[in-house]
Image (cartoon, rainbow, N blue to C red; front, side):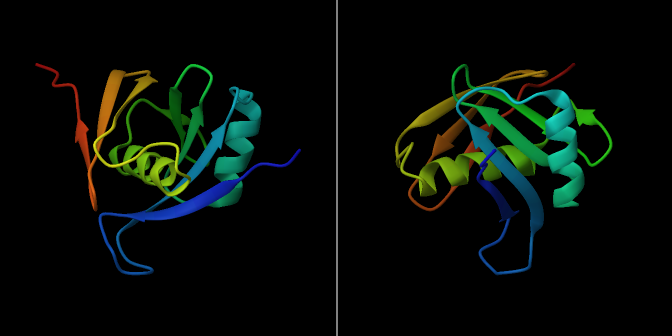
Length: 118
């Protein structure tokens, strides 16, 4: 199986700075066991997995799934822009365990609209 997996340093423009996240974007969702294996191999705090078929976004540590990951979400939006799948001015809605998260793609930044729990 061929998969493109990226490592993105969020919150920085400098190499080897910021907060690293793994990113794996596929047409259809991967199995949970495969996502865990990839996250373990990436060996960063979280690896984000986006299934383009339904825009489901999930995040895994090397040991378990987490409900929300800001830097992983930023990393996914960045890779979508780098791959030409979104452009400046677009917004992207991700279906997550925490609800719908929206990323706004700007020329040189990505803004996230997070849910607020009260």
